[in-house]
Image 1 (tube, rainbow, N blue to C red):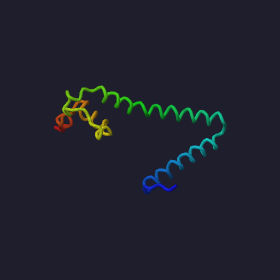
Image 2: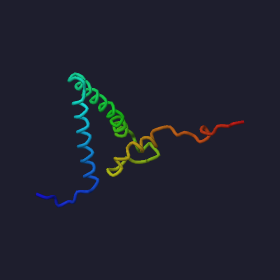
Image 3: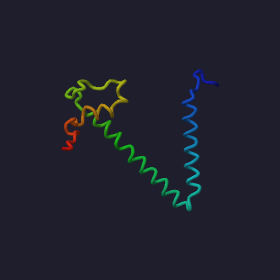
Image 4: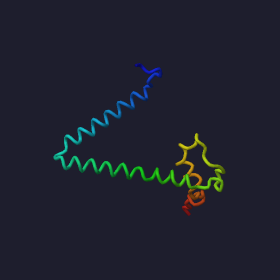
Length: 107
């Protein structure tokens, strides 16, 4: 059954990229010198993926626990602003750098 929604070019290119990435991954495993090395590569990729998930999880937890009323933002982010959690945390929860600190006097 055909979908009533047209497939966008972005969706098609994303699917091709995912399939190409999977094919490259399987090719790398097939070209490894031993099955032990392929298993080691798999576990290494798993550890890298877990390590890359930690910062985004921390930012989400910090944003959830923040009293946004006490910040200059003044209110909790609404549902449309949830994707902006990282920039909001960086802007309102980190110390401001003064412009005078950035000026270097060459006298």
